[in-house]
Amino acid sequence: TSASMLALGTAVLLDHPEDYRRVGTDPTVVDRAVEELLRYLTVVQIAFPRFPKTAVEVAGQRIEPGDVVICQLAGAKRDARLGAKMDAFDLSRPVTTHLAFGHGFHRCVGAELARMELRTAFPAIARRFPDLALATDRVDYRQLSIVYGVDSLPVRLQPEPVPAAGTA
Picture: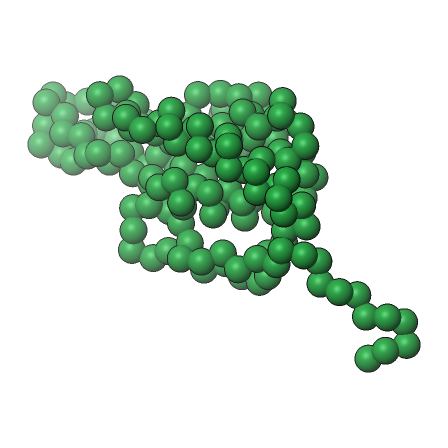
């Protein structure tokens, strides 16, 4: 999950070059960037299944005892009723709670370690590789996994050289 979050978060930041630079140069935005990336990406896609003991209605849908209920965590913070453009990464968005690490009894025990890793890694990558860029127009996302991620993230460490005037 941490490796997936680092790769996907880096890809998102590279799609927002100004935010990528800020993460590497402005320590005051790092916490907000990590929380927004966690909200936006939510690499663990579904929560542990729940089994209601009594009948209940949720959003007009009746759920009976014995039914299996699975929450799609990635969609939990995308509802337009929560704010504008929730389907977009926005570093200026105020930090809000999210379900990237689950909730309650099933909350990830490594959540704070993961946050610490991300708060350390993203600025370190941006400082070490200020010209980092995706080396492809298409990122292939992992198939058949409850952990959202990529198998690889091709990048260039330095800008492509610009041909001199008059050369082909």
